[in-house]
Image 1 (cartoon, rainbow, N blue to C red):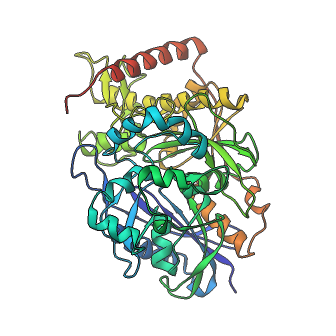
Image 2 (cartoon, one colour):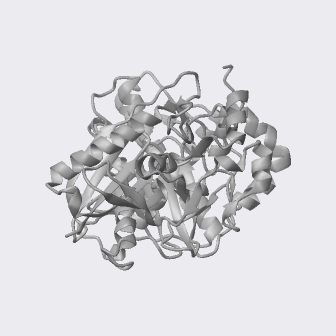
Image 3 (spheres, rainbow, N blue to C red):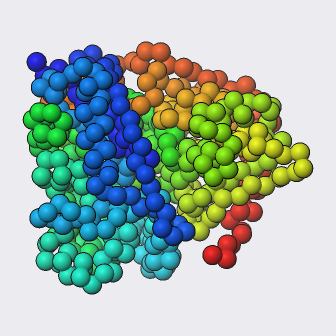
Amino acid sequence: MKDCVLAIDEGTTGVTALVLGPDRRVLGRAYAEVPQSYPKPGWVEQDPLVILATVETVGVQALRAAGVAASRLAGIGIANQRETTVLWDRRTGTPVAPAIVWQDKRTSTRCETLKPDWSSTVRRKTGLVLDPYFSATKLEWLLRDAKLKARAKKGELAFGTVDAWLAARLVGRHATDVTNASRTLLWNIRKGDWDDELLELFGLPAALLPEVLPSSGVVGDTNRFGGNVPVAALVGDQQAALFGQGCTRPGEAKCTYGTGAFILQHTGSSPVASRHGLLITRAASLDAKPQFALEGAVFTAGAAIQWLRDQLGFFATAPEVNALAAQVPDSGGVVAVPAFTGLGAPHWDPEARGALLGLSRGTDRRHIARAMLDAIAFQCADVLAAMEKDSGKRLPRLRVDGGASQSDLLLQTQADILQRPVVRPANVETTAMGAGFLAGIATGLWSRDDAREPTRGDLEVRPLSKPAAVARQRKAWSAAVAAMRAFKPQT
């Protein structure tokens, strides 16, 4: 009986795999980190082969933990870190360069050069902004190598985001889905196709590009997990979380706290234009009918806590930040701006750098830890404010998920700053859940309505701070961001 789904979330810092049973409950879980390298300031890379091996290993481990044989799998759903750019030999499947991660800023200058003449065209066609965050300039940078460029023109190389890389290696099909295609700066979001003018702008041969599929649907079979199983969903991680939270109707929104933080609001079958620095992106689709969302991206969220752990040695494990920060009632006037890889929405400043302001002789690591949690919440509040201006709708509550959402202190801070409830589901791994739901629907295991069933065990956190106190905090935050953006590093 094929009554289970393997759901894989290939994230920036690690891979999570869940085995979902017939009632969509988690039967088994596995996780492993994926290392990153930083060869130069602003550069972030990963090894595509390590990504692939980790996905395979973690998937097998999750099945083992669940006590489920591959023969019981109706399908596999894969969610992936978006924008990360992989280039490989089409015949051998061998990467020809390291994967350039979405956080990488090496093409900042190129983006700035293009903005005067191309910003409006790129915005109109793709719903995105000219920023090194996206795939096109990363791929263009890789093809500055004349030999690789020549091979690309001959059709010998293949490009893709991580989902396409995994599909190529797992099922032998060069394919991506609409959510990932919409993050490349190469896909016309309204026409639903690769854009010839943008390909010409970046000097990219069309032969490099993958086939674009709906998010839910059988891509092909793989035998890498102990049996012949269809890969039945490919979807960008944030759109997977939106679907996993049941936000499939216009106006519904979620925030995922991961390495970065991402707020998406579903806008239905038509795009909503942004005048406040947000992105238009494709939401997960079950068929050829397009679905859209507004998105605001915070580049550094959980990564800021990792920085306190790894670079400053404040604690041994990331969850310890909560106990440390809770030892003080507030940040003692310290404001952190963790723009380690630039600022995303609504500022879009790739040259921005991190800052700690308001330090005094009385400041210690407790205040800095508290300020860093505050900063995550402030960044998300900025995005949500822009989103409400664009959509014209005030969200009554914010649904949250992701690893950092397990911090009750962060959720209380977020609720206080937003002055509205924040709701955390019982299972915060909604990215993997969304990918699993999409695969289950594609294979007929579940219906379209199953994923919208109410979640049991949700936690609702209500605001405790008074509006006047929050207004003072937000004023200090805005001043800190302005001061940081005015500072220009020498390197």
